[in-house]
Image 1: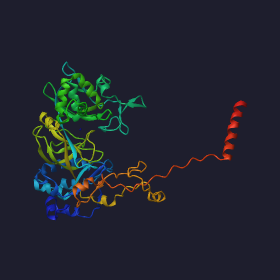
Image 2 (image 1 turned 30 degrees about the horizontal axis):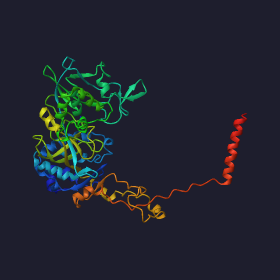
Image 3 (image 1 turned 90 degrees about the vertical axis):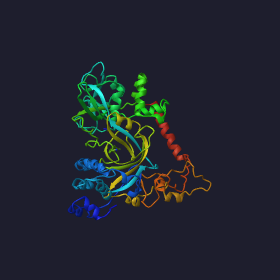
Image 4 (image 1 turned 120 degrees about the vertical axis):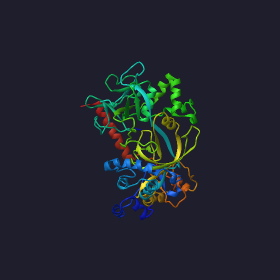
Length: 500
């Protein structure tokens, strides 16, 4: 399925004195770097709605993630921005006796630093919503239930993983194994819908329509309600290797549904009203998801990619290539929670516990709202820009990277520039002037204005333009070179006439 210390007295109220004395020893501060992102250190007072949130709920979700954080292999997170830095606040969280909101807020304020984060050159992040559908189904195929929900096929292969691996990645190439060695791309959605893997005993259950299956695949899990009243719980297991294509975006591009009216409910309505068009639209998304059946009761929440149960209203899916599961994010702005036209203030501390193939970027999140129709209605209308604040453990220094990051080299180098000085009549936009490369990430110290900080990396001043060296003149062959060329050609001609 489908991302400043406040004093010894406050810290002492959180954990035992022996633990606090151990925690205050000197630890190295490692620089923070987020690929493709920019961030600004901010104070807690600068975060709108921070004091009004229920930090105890967020702390419970964070502590649930800590079980997986401490059990995770170091190599799995070593190259990401936070690396293994969450282990220290998780160690404290598991030992701390926190039972009220004030202590929970003090925990986050003493163990983390706040940085406002966004994509390089932008000011806001972007959020969508997801949920766990409750749909009708059957264990066997009937006249009503004709659409199979498939488990992972045995001939599906991903490099670096065994075919019996408990879970496979949701990005990258996926192959179909033919014989022992031959690998070809796996079947796409159209081929699978047309029966490419039918009749192999892969069916977990059967649904009423391909539309039900499509939205189940988009959400990554479902509760399938059987005719006898029991429930099957299914979760994401693997996919067929094709990138996800949003069918809603296609309807917008074709001027079928206006952008301001787009929602999951509107897509479903159009598909129900246009069954033939729904087939063609659905197959534009060549990605296809396979599921596994999980042993959860009706009272249990779905399990995210981190391996812990999701917390409705507190769990988010993030880009797993950039972020570490368990990272707290404070998301602020307005969302249509109560109705489609509502602008409900949303200021909430969320925990990264899941991921999705469409969730890409440093400030991109899918908000989890739970199970059932109401959660589906809320999540289906979310496509909004929001402010993101990432909580960074104190062992990382968000300012150090700004002090040590080298500036991009100018092109050509200074030595070449001296040899070929710029002409006075050369225009700044001369195509012969090489562009300046941009840095992978940017950071501005907390004392600078926020607006200037967010655009500093995107609007860096270009270097002085320098022309490239003139093209060398063509050198004509001299008499000796011409003579050698004549003799070589003459000998080749004689060999053709008199072969040995």
